[in-house]
Length: 595
Image 1 (cartoon, rainbow, N blue to C red):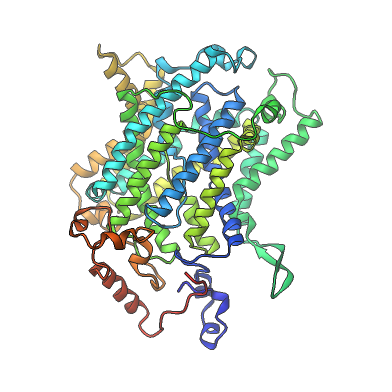
Image 2: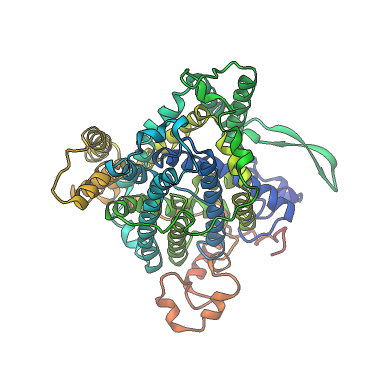
């Protein structure tokens, strides 16, 4: 049930096993915690997503020739926070309506970096030299803005495909052909294809980057079950200490902050070299010291702030590979989120709407110029399981905080002063986890089958070999048609496209049973272990009474993203019967928080 576990002091409550008590939710999806709790937990969700969100503009800045322009990097960070906040509010209010955070996606990074590495977009040599870069010169501004506009256009056109797939209900059709053997190489290669970026950043000072990695591993793995006492106050207990699993909640933030602080101490005590040519110079914290003072306090990001987007076929098709993997990952996140927030499994209309709104989010991200799209954040779904707060109002608070953070440029500017080796240390952990998250999808397929071992192995290896060869031999593709050359260049240097393509083609053409391929287990809707105390309509119907207004129209049943028109539809009856089957004796408890 979703009632507060610590409020049940009756005989029956005390008999609950410790395991059941651990799995109790403090707040359900539709519950509204106190406003201060919403803000505190919203900040925590923001900090959980923080690592992934700031990593994207920092990686993109290499392809956009912005390594030595801290001020623009700060603007990009502010813009991505602003758009992530807007997309989160859209998703929670009109999309899937589950407590799920939206943020930048690594799935778009691989095709974006492949596009920016084309001969046409390779950074001029002078942009790599800090002493030659004048960040206010029109020539330099045009260098990075022309690249950004090309990215924006590709993302906006690519996202229209996601809008179409979501709102037309085609996602269900795609899921029939896409199984673990397509998704595993696709997601794994997102992480593996970024090894060069992680190595370059970490290699600026291996000592500092190793320390950052070690701290993040220490906090997230070894100390995660150790609570830290914090002084807290409430009316009944007055001033007392509560134990908070701080290391489990904020390992990335703590690791980065501590390394950042040590780099600062090393900088002021001149332990780190002050000559740009010397090894370790980039670990200094005073390299972008003027960025914070230059950044305006307040800046409103707006669509087309870098100019009118341009479009290329090569860029769009590359981004489509990212869109597909992002969509399928999100469907998995929706089911996990429903399970952890005490909601019934999401019905088809809610999933269709969720994917459609994510497509609109990518469209907005493209228009605003983040150089990226948006997707559901698995890290934040995991945080629901830790905090036991499944309320969507908390995510609304988190979304509002992201928007506020995006409006205050000084905050974005502060993050750009994080030394490159510290960022490199974070990348080592983050990209490793993404690679492993892809492989974990193989648990659904039968990996004792030689068919599956061959498909996965060949897809992964091809996804590493082919892009590597094309990078080293960029002139090898010469069909005589410039547009076709560019298209092949982007697709064949995008690891995740090659791995995903071979996985998809071989999995659907080599004979194998649905069970062997993992499609059967993959498409099973995971049902909640605890009782579903919430009806499907209560969670997934549209807000502001829109669903009840539309319920009188008969055509609603033919619209894939709208809930069925009858309030007491069969779907809800199924959910109700499910709840009674799972908990036949115990009546539904009264929720602790008024709706």
